[in-house]
Length: 119
Image (cartoon, rainbow, N blue to C red; front, side, top):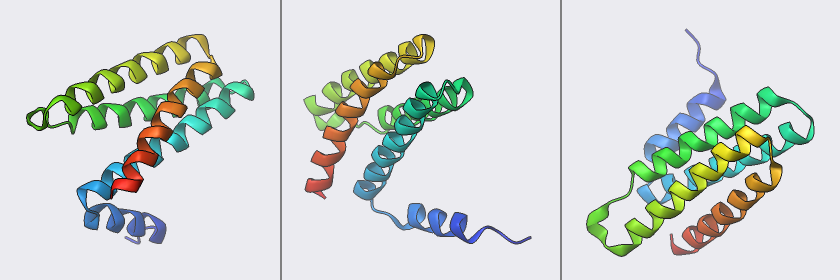
């Protein structure tokens, strides 16, 4: 069975990435799906909006699960921030409100940019 070369490439990137690079990939993936969600709302494409929001929430759940609470106060602060983002996205999905998505997009962009400079 032949596998899609793009899929193989992406899979290889994930398997060989450092933990810091994996975190950056998660942030970038979440931002990509947030943009798709906003576009879905603007296009009145509920399925597109719902799918993107669900995928973003899945990524935020992974980010939450990756926290190491033995690393001090930063883990608890990130946990609270991720929980807030998750709740805002749930509300955005219920209300189909692009401004709530934009709020989370700003927070994730700031986290991503800060992380990008540290790796």
